[in-house]
Image 1 (cartoon, rainbow, N blue to C red):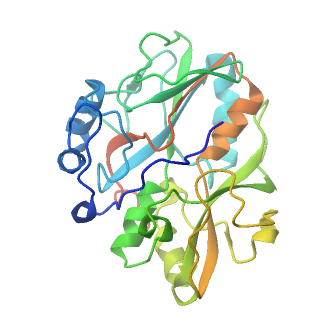
Image 2: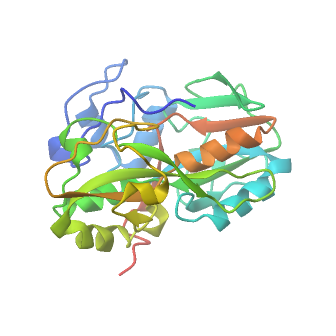
Length: 290
């Protein structure tokens, strides 16, 4: 498993986007202006192969996990039993790559910028599409992503230190075990965002409105309560950019199911490449709690 080290972090507010381009010349600012369907089309055409951070603003973005049919029921149970780190958005039909609930005319084989292919738990490749490796018994799972609530936090005026520092958010493997399901088990993984002490309550309030994007924090304060001895020793991402008066606040993280899947070692597993998400048609506000 490789972390997000080195991936560019860009502000998710459109007017703060850095005008970079991917290898095929499409400007990030131009890509950010596309609606979800048009964005998926340029991704399908492999005209955009970079991270989806800052794109599809206002839309739910999703992690992807695809497992064989014989493992799908247990993985579904794992998602249902661990909704904080593994919020389930949609389950696809057996053998079908077509998304039915959260997007129209979408195909999970082609509509994410990059993928990871595992065989028996071992990384095999990181292709731009899954067309050549797709299996007839594949079952796809679209899972919630924290980009949903980060947009809301910025809109509410809450600072995000990793974006200020242009680094990935710090991510840690905790000593809290997820509720197991069949062969799927493992620790909860969390992302951490330093929040000024007087704004922690607001951060909890804002993020709790987005259960499909990990929702409210799983822990506030002492990292030792999660088995994290040193905040600077991240497992994925980048060491935190803490400022005076900041409190560490921890949210469930989408790396959790990837660790569970890798540990279970299915015949094959297809996932998204870190920060290269599926951008859905569903508004991030559509399912937000009042």
